[in-house]
Length: 455
Image 1 (tube, rainbow, N blue to C red):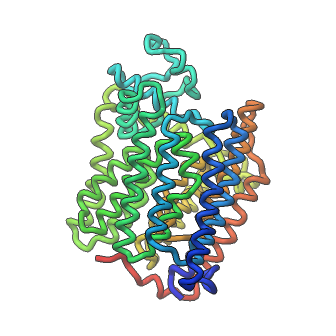
Image 2: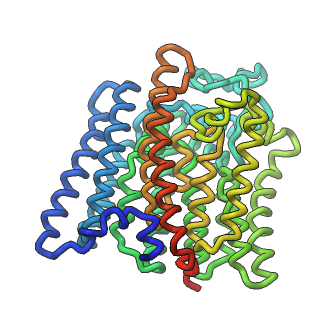
Image 3: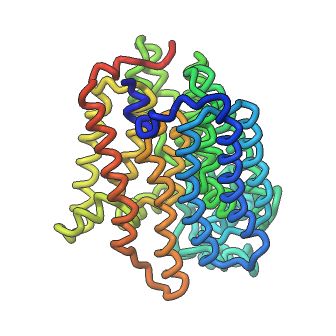
């Protein structure tokens, strides 16, 4: 049994993996039906009055339908023409939401405000939105709708560049930002296509990304910026495999300058290189890009001030954090424990014989397990790798995270931010069971990790 069979849903469905040609049209029709069902629920949001209740219901139901679609994709052979048509269909669906106002999050108002501030020649890290020195920039929309207007921005320099350009294009409308997000989606799809060609994988698995409700709800409705960082990360990995390593390292540095999760990749690139020059470049180039991106801001403000505060105090939907909190009440102690455990797990990954993609995927997946803060849009960082790794624990995670919007609904109606233990249990218990099942299967055939990426 191969590593793919152990780590993916193929293992669950191997009895029917070889679909006969005569059955293919019927299975394609089933996939089309499931696609239509999921897409219909998303499209309905365009025609019904906006409500967080409708958004949450659609997100949860679409995520359940998506898991059913995954089973169909894994179990059956599909024509490449049909797959390309479906990928194109899902992309067109995203375009329909180009001007659609976010429902589940108000983060994009902060994006727009940061862009507006910079266009007026002010360092966005210098003042909080409600600072009186920015009163001349205030409008009916901004920063009135910005959450926590007393807190300075947390977003990294390349994100700030996107905010500036987005505001310059679309002013206070969200379409300027979403146009960039569509370009990022294209970059991810193109990267996956070329990775699949290099790794000789069936193109049907790209649907695991293209049809993922998390992508539609968190990025093409709610307009979060993380997809830009994930797109640059995927492009960097692709270029690396196609021997465009230095260019890939530059893109990796730009990804770090949007949000830092891709920093987890640097040790694996370092490990993969065989020469001193290559090892040096794998670290120096991305880190240099990150440092250079901060230079325009550091002389007049402290760009990581809010990041430090956020990382030290905020919590939401953290699996290990919430578990340890049952035993220990001190926030900092819990964070130290979670951090130490993650570092230990990361070290095991680094020295294991897992292949390059599994190490990258698991390092980010497990970061979300040990992190005190796991917003749904954070999962994009490993979701983009699911078409390659096809781990069902990961597929369940990106689907079940939709349940966390019960907390958001409660907050908007009662102004009380409360996590529900039953939601955490429904989200994480199946993940733990599936993940350990996958890992136990790996235990019996350790030599399968000898495979490496193509040179």
